[in-house]
Amino acid sequence: QQQVKQSPQSLIVQKGGISIINCAYENTAFDYFPWYQQFPGKGPALLIAIRPDVSEKKEGRFTISFNKSAKQFSLHIMDSQPGDSATYFCAASGWSYKLSFGAGTTVTVRA
Amino acid sequence: GAVVSQHPSWVICKSGTSVKIECRSLDFQATTMFWYRQFPKQSLMLMATSNEGSKATYEQGVEKDKFLINHASLTLSTLTVTSAHPEDSSFYICSAQRSGSEQYFGPGTRLTVT
Image (cartoon, rainbow over all chains, first blue to last red; front, side, top):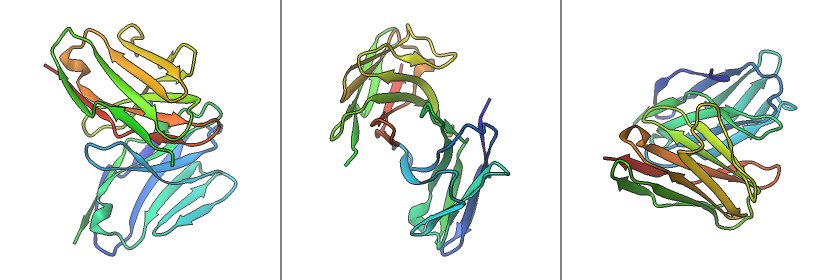
């Protein structure tokens, strides 16, 4: 049973556009919500992460929006570039530090 | 900083043999290491959690006698797939964590069992 639900499964965006990926969780004990970027044949790399005490965090072109009451969080990729084409995973963890991953979203940025 | 390496990056072995995968934290001491398995176009599935000097904790459904994990030092954990079969072919990824901090992932090991 997947503890973190992620959508969409895939998306295509034009260069310069905005990519939006959504995740939802049920476990209210989760207190750490990272996003990972993975290229084919590589391990995942941390992109950006948020804790529940803030509603938004921005790092460069990447922004996490967090809605604690709705138990949802999302990743926005602004000004999408072809190099952003990858699979993105949301995740969540609590006191045990074990990460529960979403199913992943394959993002394709068309030049 | 916070670099994690895995060796080998890919391995092919015959059915019935065992294969060992190493995970090293190169520039920090990892109190906890995690092992994941990822099938093509799927998410990462946690297999086990290991703490230095103690027995690994396996997730439900993961055979501990088949996937042997040793965390001998604060910078090295190994995963041995024993009596490998074609269905064990997968991408195995480790991560390392300093106490209370984020997990840093290795580059993964592609295992193909023929």
